[in-house]
Length: 235
Image 1: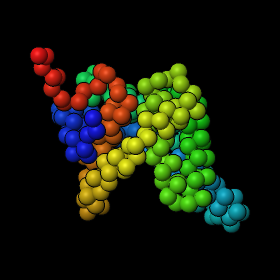
Image 2: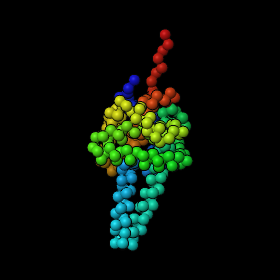
Image 3: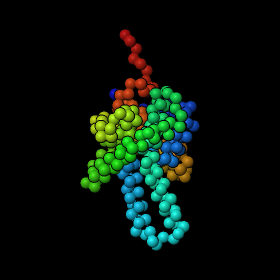
Image 4: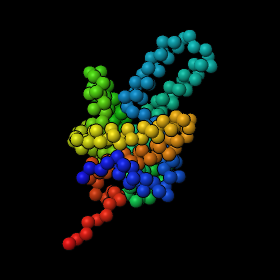
């Protein structure tokens, strides 16, 4: 049974009830480690910064050169840390839905998966870039087809990135528009975030990521997930 965006969000709010402080803490840790940067955006931005820095290296003032070097070092750190932080943040949100103990420190518990996270970023970047260069629409479709890869790798840690991508394509078949609608339903909240100079993001990001975790639970059929549904009565 498919749920509507409103139902996904309702279940997310129920899971977040009494856990908002933890959710904001987990979101801040994940954000500081680059967990929310998409592979296509992050790698393209990093390559651009590196290219520009190399070209103008000799013409930079000393103090600005130091800032660029620090920026590159941080970018490399985020590039490696973003994947594991994403896995840990997904684990946190799934724990909320499963009614397991959820703590912000869970975001830091997946750094043993750093190489898998790196490979995931590179693989997704290659696919997204290839189809985006063909046409914008195929690029967007590809991005949604592989949207569940981080969730699958977190839940099934023995999977390779390739196997997770294959499974993501399978479970997202017929659900891409559904996920697009769910994400678009937060558009008004993002406008509010602009008006509040980003303060509303402390509410929006935990809310949206919890709702997306509900979406994964629904389409993947995780048996132990909490859906807020009553069990049917036996006749």
